[in-house]
Image (cartoon, rainbow, N blue to C red; front, side):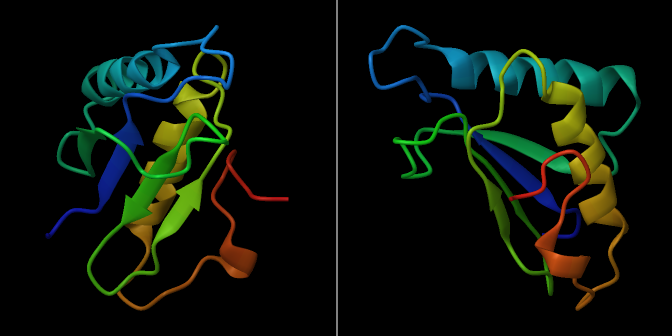
Amino acid sequence: MTRPLVSICRRCEDEDERDAGRGELLFESVKELRKKLGLKDVFELEAVKCLGLCRSPCNVMFEGDKRSTYTRTQVHAVLEPMAVVQAARAYAALSPGEELSERRLPGLSAD
C-alpha cells in the first residue's frame, strides 16, 4: 500500500434502522469530493461490508504503511464528508512513523 487507505463501512445504519444506507451515503459523498478535489493520487478509498463497530455508525478507518491506524465512529453522513476528506489529506501528509498529536484527525477528533 503506497497511498494511505480510507475505508468506509457501507452498511452502517442506526440501531432502529431508520438511517439505513447512511454508510453508503457517506462513502459516495467522500468519493465524489475526492474526485472533485483531484485527490485520487493522495489517498485510496474503499467501501467495506463491515468494520465491526455497528453500535456507533458511521465508521471510517484510516490506515497506511508505517502509520498508526485511526478509526472514527459516529461520523455524520450528511454533515461530515468534507471532514473525512480533510482528515484523509492530513493522514496522507504524515511521514512514515509520524503520529498525529493525541491521535487527532482534523474535523474528526475523538473526544
